[in-house]
Image 1 (cartoon, rainbow, N blue to C red):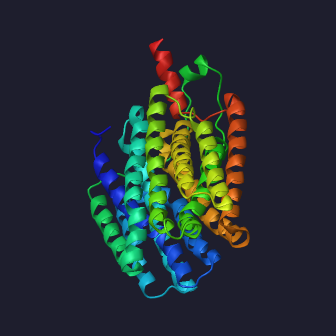
Image 2: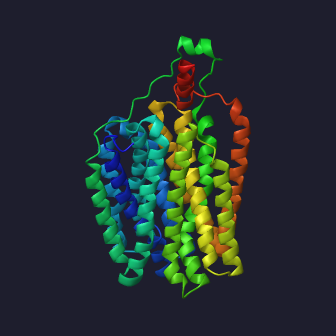
Image 3: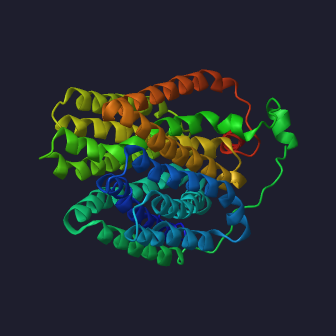
Length: 417
């Protein structure tokens, strides 16, 4: 895995880019609230960011084929952080939402490119660990910069955070220039070899959405709640314990990211050993559900703020494993030549959920307080579990496309028999 050309450069570049993102993620909504903005507007800053992200992700696979990974990632890193300087000049609704949308363009291109590039650079047998290691670097970046942004904003003002976010994004752009200059594989029509027809029942191609729908919804169900966690958990912690909460607000977000990092990598290791993804998906969703329920009950009952740490560990761990399981499931079900589409779909599911969750659950928070928002998030995760269980039952009858990872593994087993 480590000998794959450009793998380390990708990890460092992505860590820096997510550092810029993590610095600003909880700071911008909090700055809006501190400047007299509503909870709905605070959530909308993340919502519009993710809306621009999703729109960009739709077009990114075509850009990766036409101009290559390196130019796309350099542009993405620049756009992710540098426009944040615009927050210095105004925190009124229109300027704030415009700057957030510009940054979302960079985030959308980056997230699709980095996941797909890992699948392009690393051999299939190491893909689970490689994807997990990508999560480790992202998680470490979040652990470091999520609390750093809040601490710097509290002690030196938010303008320092905006400038630092722009500088770190430029570092990521420079690192992206060290990535091998390759382009995403062109689309090819699925082919059927006579030997495979003779050796097993004919499998017909089916629509992509049928193969990736349930993994996408699994990610979305938890990322919606993550949108509420990233946007409102710091404010909820401070409201729950004004003294201790100010110190713990950033730390709890850091713990969420750290738990996600560890368990995402663990999920990748398990997948590589089993040779097939999915074994930890449902337990991970259940852990995420229990974590959110604990957060909601703690806030509603005004329990000790320390219970939120346990909830953050459970939610972050479950969320990390679901991320890896869903991405590897898409790589597993789709042809190797379509890894950029798989990455785009996964990222759209992740980021659309985060944006919708921030906006929709922000409205819920305005009406039912923060505990109501997290309770609504728990219901969404529960629905995702139901859908995953149904998919698991029906999966044994699923018809998949040719030339995907599942088909190739079958061919290897048959050739060795």
